[in-house]
Length: 217
Image (cartoon, rainbow, N blue to C red; front, side, top):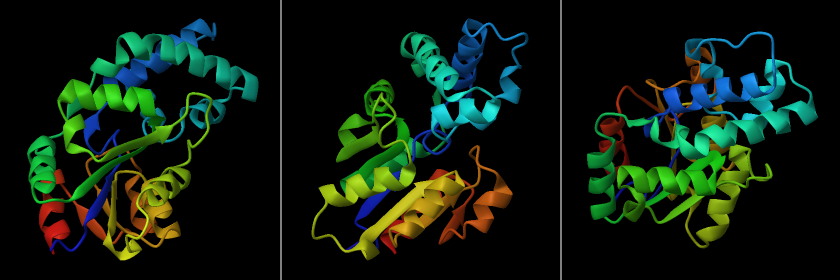
C-alpha cells in the first residue's frame, strides 16, 4: 500500500507552466480596461496561482473593475491562453505511474473547473484523474482551502493522513495544513520561495517525479 492514497495536485506552476497564456490574458484585460500602460509578461507572473479577481485588486483595481477585468481576461484565455501552456518535465509519466498504482489523483486548483478540465484534456491527462475541483466562474470556491474542503467531502471515509497536497504556492501548503494534510512544495513554480518555506510544507522537491517515492513511502 502507498503511504498516501489520495494525491491532490495544483495545476498552474505545479503540473504546467502557464506563464505565456496567463500573462498574455492579463495584458489583454488591462488593455481592454484602457489603462495608460500595460506591463510586460515577465512583470505579471504574480497573477499565476492566486485567485484572479484578488490579483486584479492587488494590481490596484476596484472590486467592480476587477470583475470586469476577469471577464476580459477570459475572452482571451478561452480562445488562446488555455493552449499557451506547457507541461513541466516528468509530470505525465509520474502521474501515469501513480494512477497505475491505484493512487486517486485529484486536481485542486483556483482556476475555474471548466478551464481546468479543458487543459487536462489538451495534455491528455484527464483520464488519469479521479476528479477535478476548481472555482466557479462567479468566483465561488476560489480559495484553495475551499477547494480542498470540497474534495474531502467527495472522499468520505478516507483518513486525512492518506491525503497529500502538491503545489507551488504557499496557499497550497497553508490550505493543506488547515485540513491536517501533509504537503509537497515544488520549488520550480511561481510561488515565493520565502513564503513557501515559511508555510512549512512536509516535503520540498526540485522536480515533479520526486513525489513518486514520497507517495509510495
